[in-house]
Image 1 (cartoon, rainbow over the protein chains, first blue to last red):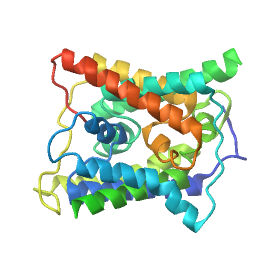
Image 2 (image 1 turned 90 degrees about the vertical axis):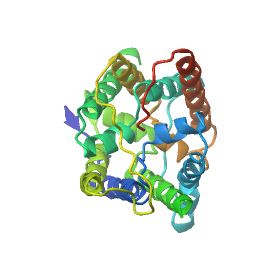
Image 3 (image 1 turned 180 degrees about the horizontal axis):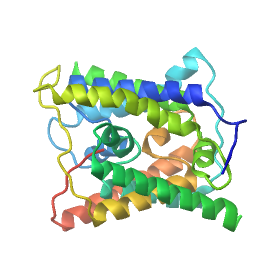
Image 4 (image 1 turned 135 degrees about the vertical axis):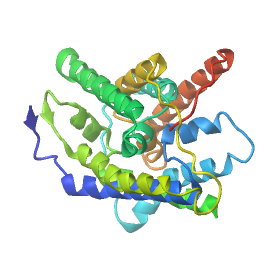
Length: 143
Length: 145
């Protein structure tokens, strides 16, 4: 294993993580809700009375975030290497997988691990492992 | 008030994703590339979030209800079953393929052009496939996040 120190950004990543933790904490303590993105979005496709508004508001904030960020400074540059077919296959896997697995990086990875829940530890270990293996195949064996 | 809290926490969550580097798929894949030149930055995102989360969830456990009233809805599901294992594996594979997970995809929609849009539409289609399949299969599931 070799660490890529040119791309390593521990401080901004830690700061972003603290912001994510803060948002999670406020939503939990004020509204009594878990900030799990796939769960929040999934609930919109399974509408029950009185349970829609906060989900729409949260997603609106999330979608609006880059617009607000842009007001203060330029957005960091991003690079998406995946082509259209890969994006579609990946999106389907993420959509189906997070709902069957009851959570994603935020629901299991942050909220679940913060509760030291064994179920979320298992899910996080498995999706990280699948991510490592997928990138290994895609980047080092196929290309 | 609950709507305002939801809007602001969604916004702060999204800003956190942008600041942390999670909205850059090439950085996510650099983090998942443990056998190549590894960029461990994103471990610090999870570390920072969990640091705050540990305190928040511990505090939440001592409260009978949320500050704005109503129950604090924590997941009650405990068992690790086939659905969880296969679901997490499928999610991880999709995450590794494109470098997007649900939050960063949504936080890239407004400014990221067609690629996050294509991913998000496919992700919503995947969620819809689950909903349709799940309604025909009557086993109840708990939603976590």
